Length: 268
Image (cartoon, rainbow, N blue to C red):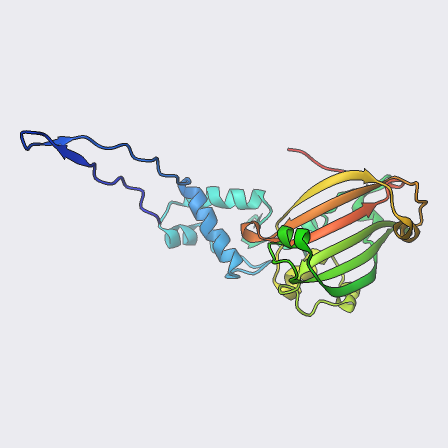
């Protein structure tokens, strides 16, 4: 662990030759609490793939011994990781790396809910992949994904049908370097959340996302795909998704119909 012990004070020598303590002003060192350091160490191991999704991480006692800290410090670090949905505690079994394949996080990034029933009772969306191709990132997209302008990206357009109604039209951009081999058949045949596919097939774990939401009108092509008129207001949801260390791995623009669904967000 980093050593934050203070450096010896500087001194000046008086006319008499005796050393007089006169410490010079020192900048305050910036450091995080010990449990935050342990949290970052565990995150580093998760990012490196030491423990895979759905696998158990070492016990608090083992981690305390590994990092030479108390179990209480490890417990506090794991509590924060659990609150951020990065690990899952299971009573009597231990702590496991969270996965998008788990039922309780399956709809974690889905904010559109049906007016009647629940997301679970409505069932999974029917996905139609309209496009999946390699493209070149323009300056804005490259900046958002941390790429260079002109770098290769995978571009996906898909239509999601809920309850028999085309409800969401999404355009997705992914760094091609991270998603080698991604194709339309893979996206079509995968059962479960797309983020679970990214996790399982490409080792890319989406842990958080930021969204901007605004009301828009569709263009003619978008209106046709969503089976609405060009005068129908839609919600446009612009999302950037991140993996460990806040590295961006996805840009997504979704157009949402809200005549049978509503957008729900929980603030805490």
